[in-house]
Image (cartoon, rainbow over all chains, first blue to last red; front, side, top):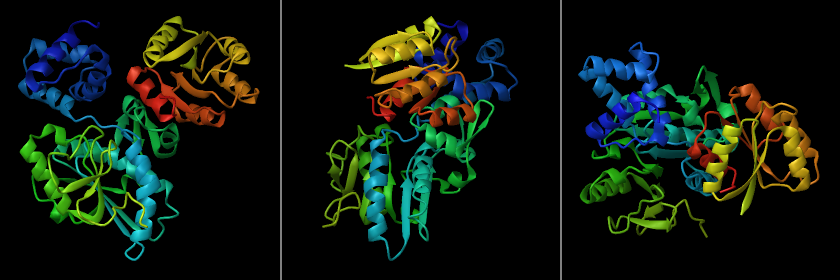
Length: 280
Length: 121
């Protein structure tokens, strides 16, 4: 167990944000807080903490807590939803939207961008079939600072190793010191916008695919119901909604119906087969 | 139970990797360099190989090229695990037939994520 600084940060984060950082999450402190340390002229976390202890600095403390607060985000999280998007939904959309040649995707709580960028990398792979098509990925999050990071598209070595196949890393990222920057081509496929899930999403337009994964868990029951209802109103009739693999609409809303139990895939209730299902 | 051959000249790394892989329910074998690993594979092909790059006697990349020419040597899923963390090395690993690539330092989450990705978990 490393000395002083870990214990200090552990206690601070637990007290301020209710966040529990265990010793095996040391790297998380490193990845999240080294940019803060460097920005203030400290060479490592020990120096940063020494300074915080020596001279209490409220703005710096808040900055440290916020840096740790970002919701976890992984490339191709859980794999299966992304395989389903590529293997079933995209081909189905290519058939059903052939007249409009337009597909719209919403990542409803995109955090630092791994989810929309994963979709963008899949689209890049399918670039030939998508010739002449307009595919929009709208990625929203409530936090402006998180969106800034997402737009930057610079990821640490730890972040690019969690879920991202090496082939994609080699194809789409450029190494910059200890960090990896995503290519312009992939970044340009995603539009980021600040959006609070408690607001009406209809101004964002109608979506064929919505990903709202691992975010409802932060809401109480009433809010979950409300948010899901609002999302259903922003979806195409045959659209499809992805929730986190441990999330469900059962008992929360009648607006959605599971397409495939256990995979977090839902369609609007009382509508034709969704784009996650084959049309007969 | 799937078997994983851990190839690294550092005993400490082998120990850490062994612990992580056993928690993921792998049966583990160890080799301290590419030649030892190659001999182990000739005796019995593992399902997975966690492979260091820089080692005495025979490097990881040389071992991998040799492995892929052996009968049944196309079967093992090979995941590099090395301090070499630049695009050129990753590219070279892909060309030599590696299935995935882990840049040190690693932790159990990264190993788990990568092994899931290549279908070992």
